[in-house]
Length: 261
Ligand SMILES: Cc1cc2nc3c(=O)[nH]c(=O)nc-3n(C[C@H](O)[C@H](O)[C@H](O)COP(=O)(O)OP(=O)(O)OC[C@H]3O[C@@H](n4cnc5c(N)ncnc54)[C@H](O)[C@@H]3O)c2cc1C
Image (cartoon, rainbow, N blue to C red; front, side, top):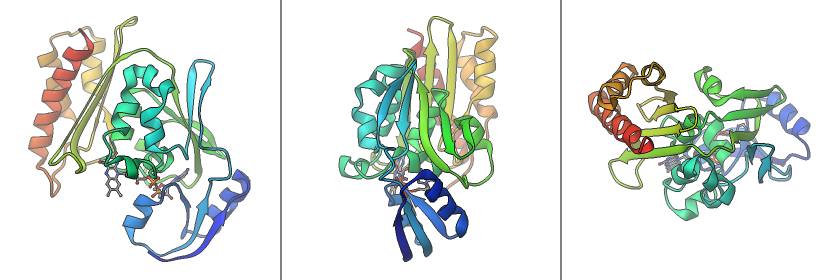
């Protein structure tokens, strides 16, 4: 990958105007995925001087700056307390610690990678995203939009919530991309479940039919898990769609059993 210019932005305003100035300008997080893309770019816009590298507690919410690394997400006590450590667990499964010290949560989410462990986990936590300049939207909404954002992702916001959770990813080897990932949270107080399935091959999505069955009061988890087969699963070099669907059904059932104990 060749890049003509590298600019360390002094403000979000400046970063955004540089981003808009040329379709070959990109915001850079850890740069790991950009580098893999092998595309020649005009400019990389570095946000590291803008204070987006913190995980902060705010009135019932946890705000994660886009520049926070996956290793920091994995190790954060605040995030380990929320959702039964779901997001920290998922981040901790990505490659090795040296890699996680570079990859950012902002790059992971903004990049909408189909195999992202972090996106699947955040979706089950009903996370929202803050973009500059347009403001907040849910992660679910962002994933449904076509393409990548033309704005700057500044924060990822998760509720400070003590739900039970489950996370499972299956890859051909431990360090390989997952061929399926399942994240489930269960709010015991309101008996509410959120179920997300990623690596289908396609970006993570909520398992809406599974959640509908649970909301209607169905608690035969074997029956409920079959509803996940209504999601779209695709073939890839690593796996057939049928195998992915089978894994999703098995782990949705096991996950529901686990978070309901
Ligand atoms: C070899 C390899 C294996 C991987 N395996 C896994 C895996 O098993 N599981 C998993 O979950 N992930 C995996 N990943 C993905 C990885 O965890 C990161 O998600 C990925 O590297 C992106 O993070 P980054 O900080 O490097 O982003 P970058 O490469 O810097 O950016 C990625 C994209 O997001 C954009 N971007 C970055 N920051 C912002 C921002 N703040 N606002 C707007 N746009 C932004 C960039 O312009 C670019 O388009 C893997 C990546 C690689 C390279």
